[in-house]
Length: 553
Length: 60
Image 1 (spheres, rainbow over the protein chains, first blue to last red):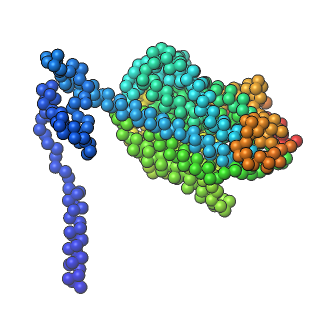
Image 2: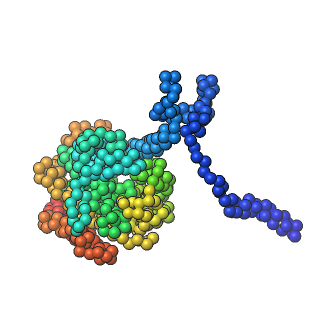
């Protein structure tokens, strides 16, 4: 017995030795003086041997070397006295490499966000009935073009025309014209004035092109939220006009106030409220703007025929394809990795390496949201509802969008879980109390949880994220109420008040006028027959033609 | 009713905005901005939505 104890003790000791060794403090770093590098040192760096290079480079050790650095004054046979490679050339190359990394990062993330349009399209179409599938898909397809046109002509200039230099994208000064008024003795930026057509005022600039592409796909995400809430009864012509106005004015105005150097971003500098309104990737700017506009449009056009009984009881109108609904949710979750981590506008410099944390937060909040919704539906209705679980995933992602750059993983899970439950409660409230018809739950997923995400910045920001030493011009890190800064929560609530009080009202007036001039709602006969044939001229699923015709008036 | 509802929604926003000028403490601004949000929500849910519900086609 004693021998066995000794043997176990020896094994444990041996196993612990490496662990203890790993915990011992590391030796202090060398205190030797830094070595100064001169131009002569650079010239001594050998380029790969030409013969070796001619043999190919299967392991990649020869490709990318000193001979690839752009030299301002190269030594050639005709210019033997030229400077050759200098430290200045090295510094310029390093600078360009940093911006190149950031350009590629921002563009690729923008491409991912663009693919989210496909996710929205199939989620919304799957949640609609067969007879409206072509119409819903076409709205999602053309919102991309309509929104982009409006944004290129007008919207981008309003949003980013006064944004100023963006350090991660090269510090170009060409977008620096903001229309400003003075209120309470402080400057209130209201809209940008440079960059129309991406050429006006020096905007023909590579930085502007990258920023336009990235911001355009964000704007389109906001627009496509409305098509879901208004699906199955929105007149196509009204959709085109409404989306154009939203892409040109509604979205860019709020985006300017939050991201383009406008008054909400400056609440910290001007009024000492935390770091001003902070919305890392757009819970408020993208999702809540889309959500409150969706609410306005849904109220104006009214519910689908048959959605409510005469005593106001809502009836279920199931979508036609859960398979593409959940596939679309996965596509959206994939695209969200462009949405949130891409909002650093770079992968190098100014705290941009936080992209790892942002991506992990995004992934976890989505997971927690799907759990929240699934468990709520399971406990309340006895089954883990598939479409609501999908909406829970999206709700978690919407909620983490604003705080993704400022919170830790535990907070991400908490706020995502709450978002998953919140989306179920909100869907019930919108349908049963407000009696507003929202076929896909867009108002709840994007509006309610967009606002929840904005508030989360003011609650959960842990003060650990430092993007170049300041955010919105205020030194230090964004810190929420739970970590000691109540001012940040107030700044976030100003954003909420603006979304509910101004953006909703603006969207309502615009769409009310469109209703008067164009007419927002398709006719009852068209709606009963299905919008595909009367509005689009073709069925999405032609083999169902007989059945679609049979449900007509 | 629709115009009244819209006016109340905008009033909520203006209350929040005005807090920047008439209050200086975080607590006072927090109170006013919450009042503003509540007023706007009342305008949307309590007035504007009711105006549309009162003439909803499913009631007929």
